[in-house]
Image (cartoon, rainbow, N blue to C red; front, side):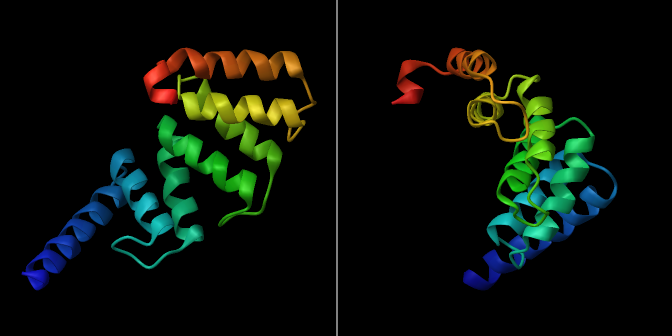
Length: 137
C-alpha cells in the first residue's frame, strides 16, 4: 500500500512540474510550497522562492504573500524589507488578509517603509474586515 501511495505522489509531482514549467501559476505555487515544506521534494527555500516568484509574477496573491514572507525573513533570498513590502502590497491590494496584516506590521515597525501608525491601522483594519470573529478566535 505505501509503495502505491509513493508512486502516486511521485506521479503527481512529475505532472505538477510539467504544468509549472508550462506556466501554470497554481502548479508553480504548489511546487513552491512543496519545496518550502519539503513535502514530495527535498526542502529548498531557494527552489521555493523561484517557483513562488513565477506564480507571483502572474498575479497570484497567495504566491505574492509567500514571496513577501521569504523576503521579510531572508529565506531562500537575501533579506530585503523593501522587497517584502512590495510583494505584501501586491497581495494585500488583491484582498489577501494575511498580506494586509503583514503590510500593517511593516508600517507599524518601519520595516521597508517609513514608520506610519496611520498606514498600519489602515492595513490592520482591512485585514480585520476579512475575518469573522469565529475565524480570528
